[in-house]
Amino acid sequence: MNLRKIYYKPIGCIHSPFHDIANMPIQPAGSRGIAGKLEIVPEYVEGLKDLGGFSHIILVYHFHLAKGYSLTVKPFLDTHLRGVFATRAPKRPNPIGISVVRLRRIKGNIIYVEDIDVVDGTPLLDIKPYVSAFDACKTDKIGWLSQKIKNVHRAKSDKRFE
Image 1 (tube, helix red, strand yellow):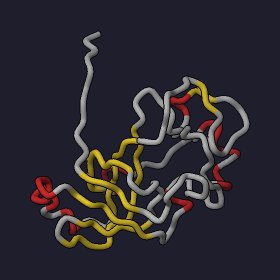
Image 2 (cartoon, rainbow, N blue to C red; image 1 turned 180 degrees about the vertical axis):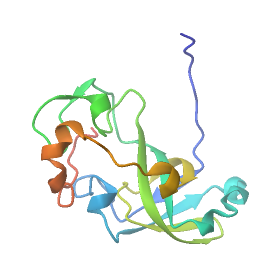
Image 3 (cartoon, helix red, strand yellow; image 1 turned 45 degrees about the vertical axis):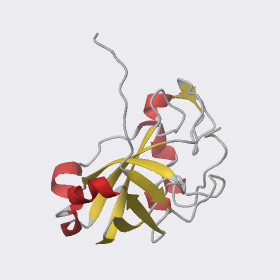
């Protein structure tokens, strides 16, 4: 294997009403209608051209509050230890998160979004358009989540970033 270090430079910052993780929704499905904004570094604004034609975007971000990682974690919706790669837990070898949010408008270097489930001040690594014809697929199974999925709308985060 040819493994080497990789470095990323944030393209902006995610702003949300969640200033700590204690009461933050754990997935966009639990944050319907919650407004946020993405503040893009001015040198990347040209890259926003044509993004306004999409209703939803994928945010790729760095879990900056996560400290360390474990290969087995107790997910937010469960009481059993699971393999970290079978979860969306923030404490992972590469603390990268993704969220699909609704794009409301773009004004200069600010992108206004809804359904945000990210803590305020999170470094934004990338934005990609969400295209249901490309990205959506019907899943056949969702593993251990099949018994827990109904709880995602009312679940809140806890202190598992630390």
